[in-house]
Length: 474
Ligand code: 4AD
Ligand code: MG
Image (cartoon, rainbow, N blue to C red; front, side, top):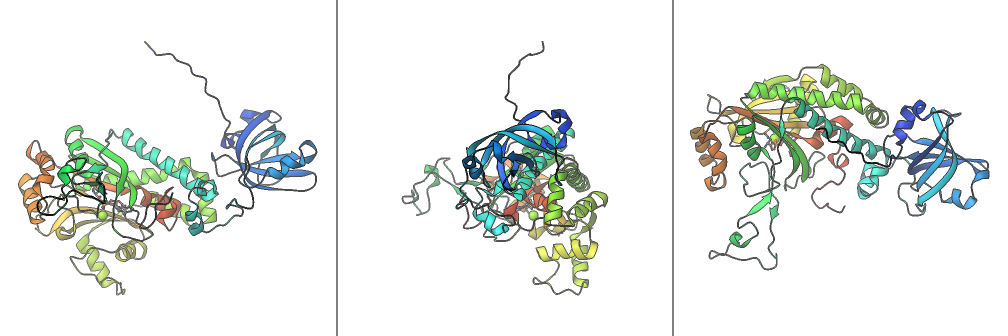
């Protein structure tokens, strides 16, 4: 039996709809819009108000004949004020817009005192906007970012859903710090002035909320693998936390990560998935959010659209870490951090490969096992593991992943070599004990992807409320 229900939802007209499809509303017809004033200009006879409701980067022009409105009301219409306007939709006389609204009534929901409202003029610096993170969604730039974050999230779910993956919710609070991806934030309900001690003088976590030491997760991967060993194809998409004091334009203490994990995939399948996934995401936003991207392209980064298309149109270069080291050594370039087989690549090395040498996105594989996590599949050479990092222009590492070690004994040996307490990870080891299977996965940093899609230089400007060292005001 079909379920029939009907609920009346108040329909608020979005400015985006009017601008995109004025015929639907009808030239000469009455419309009502609600939004925030971006600018007001005019003369003795008429006021032109640019109104934005967040549905699009474009404003609708409201034309207010001053003869119809009190001076008092017009005075209160200043940048930042919130209005409801009804009026006639007409073809625009001026340049820059096809239609405008001839105001018949204006209601002011909220004024914004020009003496104190901080977003008076255009062209504020990104640094200044970070200081007013509570108001920056009202800027054109940040409106684009928020709409793109939404679209990208939707595209991520769409991609995986279309390919038969299940969205798995992995815990944010974890008792395991085995991943080794970064320093962790403690989670506790202890009174920090009076922490219970054990017989040895250490903290007695058995008295804490979970009866053990817990932290905020650095990654959902280990739990994600448990899902993949039952459902075949899963992905996680959630917040992750890293407490290292990395004050760089590419690091956040709280960021979102997407982690697919797939049974029966080897490293080549994993690379193919990563490349296909990224290309899909870029195509999706170009197709669905072109206005926002064009705005960013025109105002901030004239090569943005070219760079996005370039990624879709070109195959990513694939090579091993060892080959990359040879290229870097032969480059003759003076790097701040010396290049030698065995060192972890710094962002300057990654960017040299991508931006100078190959001029394409690069996937590096088969890193030395000493610089990678315990769970990566060990190669026959005994020195390297089946890791893969995807490196992008202007960003460096955007994806980190690997084929996983599926062999119980090899994994256990590695865990012991790396002094990882088995008591913290016994449940993970059991996946290799009961019905183990080859599998692989990776993590895409959501904000690093946003950096690429927006062309921005600082990761603090692609997340609503950035968490970085010494900064959690909003
Ligand atoms: O390379 P990472 O540390 O890999 C993992 O956490 C694995 N467990 C992923 C997996 O195989 N399932 O992190 C993955 C990605 C990086 O490539 C980067 O894009 C992003 O997460 N990332 C950060 N983004 C912002 N701020 C930070 N501090 C980040 N650290 C990593
Ligand atoms: Mg990494």
